[in-house]
Every structure is written in structure tokens, then in C-alpha cells.
Image 1 (tube, helix red, strand yellow):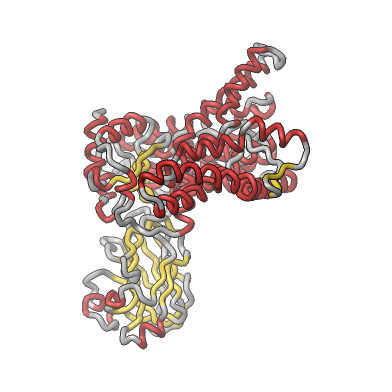
Image 2: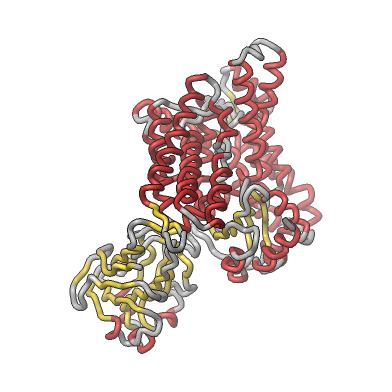
Length: 611
């Protein structure tokens, strides 16, 4: 593969180098923060040979490459000029919601350090295997030295996170590392271990062991970024050279020791209590849910929100009882569903893709089979959810735990080798996930003898529900010739009573108009639905409209998408009628199940769409 050419093509459709703010990568994806998303062409990126998929999630353009992502990343970075990142970021950027910014922050902080967390975790697993095989004794120097090597990335996790979080927030990374060093300093650790009260100028300091902690340093670096930005705004360059670092280190260190560190410690303790409660009362619940829905979390970029919880569990209890065990089951289930597609398919290209990507999933890399096979055919994804839940349930009932985090697959079984029984249960959970998803896939997928293409046994492709509560209106009767003529497609209109707008179908939000009055959803099988709120309301420039979702996010059927003030829009002289248009029905059969003039509730079925 020509990685240089691949990187050049990706960069071109991202709007070229002047549109790049930050870039990093995980085990399968390029993760790129762009300055202006309007310059990005995701459809063109998806068509590039060597790209599995491209999505916009958690404020990032994520280009799914697969196992060769590191080589593509290196080629991509070589194409970028050595520009000042601060200058780049001063240009106008897309506004993001609080939750999206939080996920983006967590993602940007954790993604760069995943290799050392995975490497250290796997080494800990291999050490456990060596001990079980009597190749190492826990009293030997070899064991102690290997253990400290394996534990280093976890013990000094605050230092690693300090650097990456500061880079993400554009704070001084070396000051951030220094602040982490304050938390881990041997003198402070000795004060904590002494059991005596600690105070600075009469201010009490809570005795907290910050080794392996996550939340305290993230809070400290966040406050550091705000303080440094303010300091740089009030000092000229000459004074800022010595004043900003001195004040930043002193103020943030004191705030960290007195307020932010203990606050993060309290949050960590609450997370620990919640984890302990689940482990002691319903140990099967979290692994079952995560085993089933991990693929959806990955698609939405929300799996990063689980990292602090899993690491907190490892730091407090020495194990992770749900995130990594559930990931092991979910990844294996993806492979099982992919193998079912290969068995049911006669088309050599799809079959070979399903086999190769399923093998990769067994090794812990699921994006190729998820985006390249299971999500495209949709029903195999359902099979994977069933298999992941079954394996996760067994893992929870037998309390399978891992000693560290990793991208779970066959190679990561070392993480479960702390006891032979735990390893055996992890393997059984994998087998259950693989077999159940494979069988479920065979049951709901059949091969079309004429085309050799895998198809689902149920020919119905979509059920559309009402986007709002109110009176149903014949689309032909709306006061706009373009919509009424059906030029844009078949659909329905609603006189909304509440102004609350809900997704009529699950899919990807491919359109969020800047003036908030129009949204577009594309389903997994390509059905395109336009939601248009009011006639000529584009002239209101977003006034009276509120959107709760962002472009390129995945939405579920019935999810609240938006709200608009029907009465205010009517008083402003505009017709507030809400329209739902199927813009590419093609050869599909559309069966209308709602009558014009009837009162209807949101989420009630209004269209049945079949092939």
C-alpha cells in the first residue's frame, strides 16, 4: 500500500493542511481535529482505497484505516507544515456542546497513551502466566523488576495524562507534568503515609495517594489552561516569559493540593463505591450491557467516557470487572457475526472481506468488520449485539476480571491470567460470544441464490414514526409548491402541538442546517429523510429553534432532535408546519399508516417502507 498517496488523498478531502488543527491516532483510526468542518468531504474520504470508513464523532474527523493506521499517520504528519498550533486554533471553529467537548477532551487525553497502558497491561498478564507455570517466583528479583516495569505506566499515569491533556487544551505541557510531579513527589507521599495532618499556611491538605489516579490531574490541567490563558493576556511577552510559569506552577500546585486533587479524589471514591456496589450486588449487569452495546459506543465515540471508570477500578481494586471483559465479548461477537456473513455469502469480495476483518476482530481490532461488514448489512450487527450480551452475561456471572485495559482479543487473554480459573472463564465467555453471534447471524441472514449477496430474512427496511405530536397534514396541502408538488420526495406534514421534534428512524444525522430549521437522517441501508420545520423559516436565522444533536452523530428512533417555538414563529408571520420528507424512496414501497386530519402522538408509526 502506498501510505504517502493515501495520506495525501485524505488530507485533500479534509481541506488541506491549513484546515488541520490536531491529529493523533488510536489502534485503527486517524483522529483529526479540523478548523472548519464545512471544508471536509466525508463521502469522498470513504471512497479512498485503503479507508474502511470515515465518521465525525466527538468533535473529531475519524478515518478508520485498520491495523496499518500508524504508517498512514506517519505519512500524514509528514505532509503537515511546522505551523504554530496556537495560531491555527485562533481561527473560527465549530461550536460544540458541553458533552461533545468533554468526550473530545477525554479522547484526546487518553488516545496517545493507550500504547503504554496496553503494553504495561499485557506485560502484567504475561508475568502472571510465568508465575502460574512456576517460571517465576514472587520473591525473586526478576519478578520484582519485571513487575515495576509493567506497573510504571500505571503508577505514573498522572504524568502521562498531564502531558496529553495539556497538549489537548493548549496549556504548557511541561508545567502540567511538573504539577503531576508535585502530586507524586516522594516527600508528599511520605507525608501521606505518615498519617499526620498536612497543611500549607493553615490550609488543610487531604492525604491522598495520587499514584495511578486519573481525575485529579485532569481537573488540575483544565484549571491550569484557564489560568495560563489569563496570565498571557495580561502580561507582555517579555514579562510572561518568567511570570507566567512561576505563577502557574505556584498557584496551580496549591490549588491542586488543597482543592482540585482532593475533589478529584472524592469523585474517584464515589466511582469506586459505585463499582463496588455493582460488583457486590449485580456483577452480571454491566458486562452484559456493555457486551451488547460496546459497538454502538464505539460508533458514537463514547467508549472513551469509560476509560476513567475502568482505570479507577484498576487503581482501587487492582482489576477491571466490566470494561475489558465486556470488550472481549463484544469484539469476539463482531467476529462471529462477520463469519456468519462469510458463510451466507457467495460473492467472493464480500466473503473475503468478512473473513479477513473477522480474524482481525478476534485479535481485538473491530472497526474493519464493524464498519465494513456488520453495520452495512445491519442484521449482522444485531447478531453481534446478541452474542456480546450472552458472553458478557457469563463473564459477569463468573466475575471475570482483567488486570489492565487493552483492545481485547485473543492476544489480550494474558490480562485475564491472574488465576487459571479466571482465564478459563474468559475463554468460555469468548466462545459463547463467538458461537451465539455466529448462530444468530446464520438465522437472520440468508444468501440470495441469484446474486450471492447476503440479505436479511425480513424484507422490511424501515418503519418511520411521527416526528412530533399534532395533527397530520397531507403534504400536498402545505403552503409551499416545492414541498407540495413532491419534487423533494414523498412525505407527511404535521401541525405540531409541542414543538418537540423526534427522530422518525435510526440513522446518521447527515444534515444539521446552520439556521437549525432543517435536519437530515440517513439510515444504515441508505434511506434519506429530511425534517423541515416551517416554511421560509430559514429567514429567522435560528431564532426560536434549538437543536439537541450534532451533524454526523448517530441517532436512535424516537430520540429528541430539536425544539422550536411554534407560537412565536407563527406570531413572527411564518407558517410553523413540520414536514418529514423521504427524499430517495426509489423503488421502495411506501405504505402510509396515518390519515390526514387525524391527531397523532410522536413516535407513532406513520410509514412502513419495504423493498
